[in-house]
Length: 109
Length: 440
Image 1 (cartoon, rainbow over the protein chains, first blue to last red):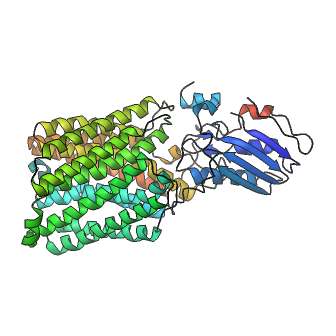
Image 2: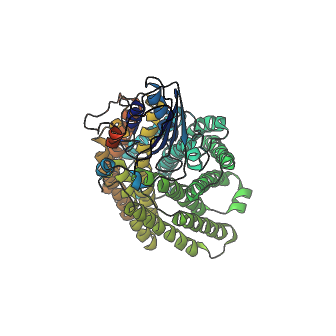
Image 3: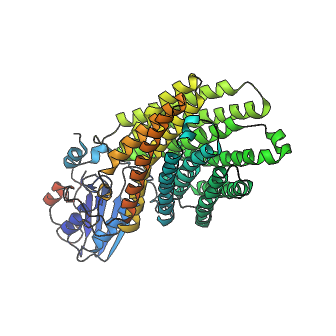
């Protein structure tokens, strides 16, 4: 699933924001959060970036770590002044959200 | 849409990591002690050495690993913050210290002062852990079947050490002995099934599903396992204290709980998306192969051998497998979370890969041989079991130390991070206020 991207006078290059997001890995599955289909919404307004994302399981032990890694990764993008990461459980993550690359890496699809 | 959850709120991972390291060291030390006293296993009788060795496994390894893990796992399962972290900081050292006293008390031939002091510390520590777990559960919006099983396991751990403490005190207090009788079976049931089976069922259900990426599993089986164990413990209590004929029905309930656990693990595996299983997960799965032989031995009347298969085969293998996963996660959190993308190792990069097959094979073969040694009262088998268990326990300790202390690097074979290919096709944003439509 490709994240929904909305921009309003973006101070940061949206492609760079998406690229930085794509580099954040789930350290357990060794797959990027974009490949896993975990990122629902990316909103860029000026230098503020708001991310709405989920995790594969509610109560995932990596909850804080992945959200923190997303924030740290985006803060290094030129023009990004602040990052707000919201982890939501609705809609819940499903395997259908994964990219073909992720499916192949996990050994199915 | 649900409100964003503000994080698992788990405390710093150093205390659980210290507990897991200490627990692994205790298992390795206990295995060496067994190697020095293999006759304790072959006799299969509750001699001082036998009791010192069994409590090294149950208290120094399993209870310490359980209590340490709980500091991180329970808030995660309940999706809330840990209540009263100071209770955990007090309970873990008290548990470790008290356990040393209990083991020394047994090893020195039922030394009353060490048993009383150690038993009191252990009991207080595990009741404090239970209070902390209950306070944490009060903060949660809801507790699912896995979290409830883990809470029940914490309660049974406190119950079993309390019973053990009273059993140790009974010979010195005739009035207490008359009141209690000898609830050894209840002590064992509350420990092996209440604390350990429920702990494995609760934590395992959630963690295994997470590690193998299984979707669509149902909580009903874990709920049923929990109620079956509640029923069995009640049956044993009525049998032990009121002398009601509820011992046999309790055993049937335990057999059903074990069968359901097998069914649950099978269902998770069938629903998994991740085809390739990691070695530590494989060990957790192999542990379940000991449930059927344990049941068969119990049915054949060889209860000591059944208990050995259950404790060393099922519980130790399952816990040691999950311990590797939990230790690597905690260490990653402590050392690598927040590092720039691409600079942190993956969890699997933190393991010494050669050790996992050794640990699994040696612990599994050691548990099987120990079971045979107890069933057949065979000293030669006891020596072989001790050697295998020592190899497995030291491999486990080495792995734990490697995870916690080694410098880890991202393996070159790990898949490179990268944006989803479709992102490169996303059109650049246009004028201010432009909104890109969601791609299918």
